[in-house]
Image (cartoon, rainbow over the protein chains, first blue to last red):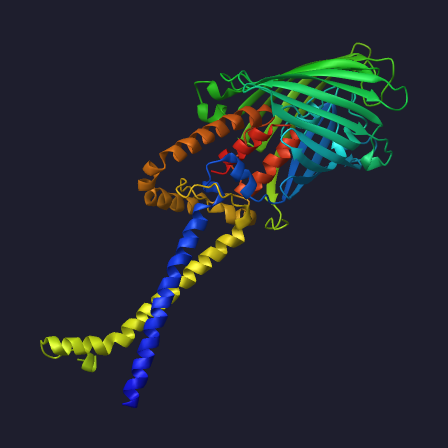
Length: 372
Length: 170
């Protein structure tokens, strides 16, 4: 009798436990399915996708190995440019880029190639996205004068590995400033976008962080329909001769062609000039499509005129340079680059410029993004 | 016969009832174990989701019948640099099969999402290709960082950034 009673009690508890467990499983399963429904990637609104996906810190680097033949002199130019991006909160971002490069060249009377490692902090800045129209940046930033310095400079982006002749105009000794910047972009209409950047930089003479005391702005208009952008830049030097510099830029990517057209003009006391570049991918050629779609043909013409104030970073004489390039993309971030250029400088400096190289870019996450 | 007294040796309703009665502890044990396992797996799954995303960050406006294109890469994006198409394909296939009947009921949401994705693709092609070759898809959490970086670097608009992120993370 006692045995029967104990068994019935156990059976009773088992029934109760089974019922409770089953009842408990149902709401938990419902919660789980609700949680799955609320996965950020299932959301239909772009706002929620932005607010729910937690960004992860990123480490990236552009790597290049170039060989230049300038006027018959062989130069080997390896370069590594690491980029670190650390987002935190909904509106903050720390970003930095450094450049480590060596220009190895033969030294008369010695064997091999020789050169010194050059280090530069291109930017190390803290960004705060204040609202949909404005981002505030403090630290060291790329000087927003024209578009090449900010957008097209990385070795894995630029179509020709040589710098434009006018690049040093108004971008300072290192292409960067140290101070504060306010920038942003917004839609003027559904087909017109405005972008702007204003900045102030202080004087810095530290070698990896050198900059000039200057203030300036850049503004651009982007027509999304024809994919045409044009704009202008202005800068006032707050040291030395307190000179002004200004420039214009334009870019066009027609929808019907895999073609990039870009141009810049800059003028300052140190000199003036322009460059016009076109890059065409052969993806529309009806033969050998599998191979030709990886090939890009590039042409660039540029001209530089000396100014009243000499600058060591600019050519010493009036110079014209025509360049023709051929790039082969294995992937979007791995390619072989090559170019030939002819420099015309009647007062001294006529020469051929050859380049063959390899560029690569990789992107890696850092940790698990739990910084938030 | 090896089952002993639980197995009736002759056809009769009474022994059968008796047999069921004597089998009931095992039956209830199995039911209880199933319930426990179900509850445990549900709780574990929910805990995993909570580890991936903060519930407070999920907007309340998310429709329950939203298109079920849940991307399992969201949670593991930080651990890998490349997307895992092999793993993602079965998941998406299961998703589409499991929610095919629900899509008709949520067709306005589906249409809205598709239009946003088309707009995101357009913005992606318009903005990203202005400076460099169009990149491949990164995992969503990396893409969130990249678009924030590009918003500053290339001064793309806030709307462009959000639409490109939506497009690149679907």
